[in-house]
Length: 566
Image (cartoon, rainbow, N blue to C red; front, top):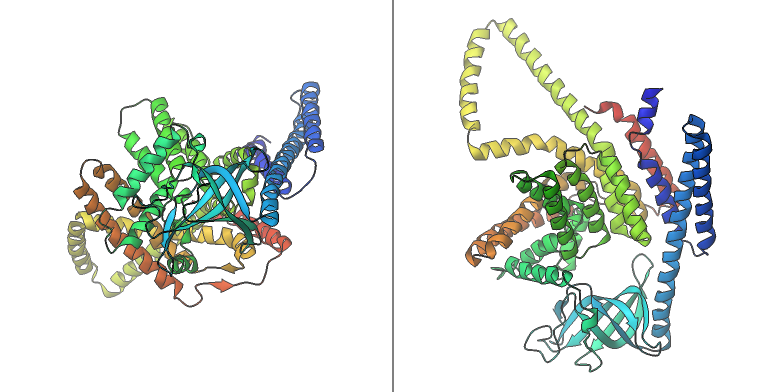
């Protein structure tokens, strides 16, 4: 009985997170009055307290109480998501009415994505960026709304976005009032996107300092811009390499061509562009390694680590997948720094509860969904697959040993073979002492684990990619084995370029030159994978029920593979 209870409480946050996520998912896609569900949740929680008080610590009381607390979490999450959905729909429809009634629109808010310069076919210039609307100053009398993201295209002279232009500079984090023609269109997924088009030096477009990023966020944004300049040193003729590095490390790089993105998409490696768990995990690992060499108390290490990871998350745009990775890193690595045991599934569950409580609508964000799917896949499938690879390696070694012994006994040349083998063994050990050979051998030894992680992510993401994109990318299993280590080297080299660039531009140029080679290899791998036969397999349209059933089957597969763990 004790063993059964131990298994139940091994991941105490897992079941609450599942109920909370289901409630959030339903509420984020339902338009209804949230308050009855909120009141029902409060009543359930009151009943839970009464049951715990009356039945105290009996097994029946704990079981009934758990049902009430799970129902409470479900109802609270449902009400929270419904309310957020209502507010979003109300503000979005308010802006949509402007687009339908009058093309002219004026918005106050903040630039939320670094402007990208482009040149039109007529030789003029333009800026393309995302803008968070906070206020409607026109006929609505300065109505404050929930931040609503719109796309902005600002046409002007070829020098727009530079100091030579007569149009003020638009930079990330700046507050503005913008005026232009508002339109809307449906994207690939059927969602409506708002677009504001501005022409020339419009006098109704001006800086609005009250919506500027507050301190210290403005300082972090300035540091991000300075770091971007350092990573752009020596990019003459290599602007695409520089853009890839800046996008992977800082979240910049919106000028990466569609053709290049498509190559990475078709090879299943486009995730390296988005700042997500991979990048935050690399930065977190580097920070933990540095802090481990410092003679600091666990508390001080935890504080330093938390500040650096939070600052990096803010500096890279704080997308839903980045925030998820930040919270997960804070929970996981602070436990390690504090000397406590960590469990990946419990960390995932805690992250889901925190992120959905803060912003329930992000559960509809594709990046957020895929980031959780991938990390859950690694937690469920990677350990048994790594265990299976270890068993295969042990079986092969045992087979080779038996064959060698049998051959030695049959030919009676055991002594000669032992002498030869000892000669080659001595020379091989001498070769192994070389540093580069050590690194190469260590990399080869990590291939089975990398392959296991890549297969785990692919298996877990089949229902999500099938439902969202109607395709799967088998070639990603092989490409990611090479791309992920390269991404690690690119991030480390970029970090060295940013640190050394503070003292010497020449050193930063050396590291940037190394990253040019790394990104060339990255693009070569993506192009090779995209051009392979059956790299991408198109699927028929999946229904939601088929996606849920396939997800359940994959979960059962993970359960069946559990005995293969080491």
